[in-house]
Amino acid sequence: MKIPRSTFYYQDKEKPFNQLKAEANLQDRIEKICLNWPRYGYRRVTKQLYREGWKVNHKRVLKNDTRK
Image 1 (cartoon, rainbow, N blue to C red):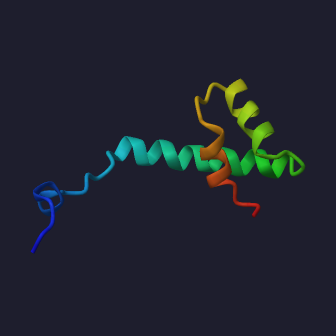
Image 2 (image 1 turned 90 degrees about the vertical axis):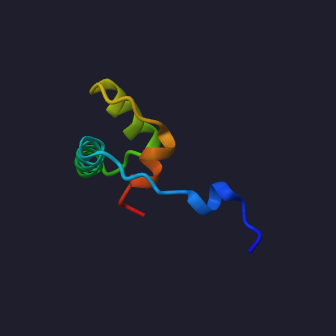
């Protein structure tokens, strides 16, 4: 078996509960913004989140957008 030792011993790290809760809150907020302003794209949704104090990348908003 020829695999790197680090791959053999690799253990996937679970996300802390606080981080999972924050992701769920962000997902809920993105959904509410999309319902309130259905014509907003991911860029406008990102700007709205920045105005509300969320520090989030536009790619994350694009991934979490449920209107696809």
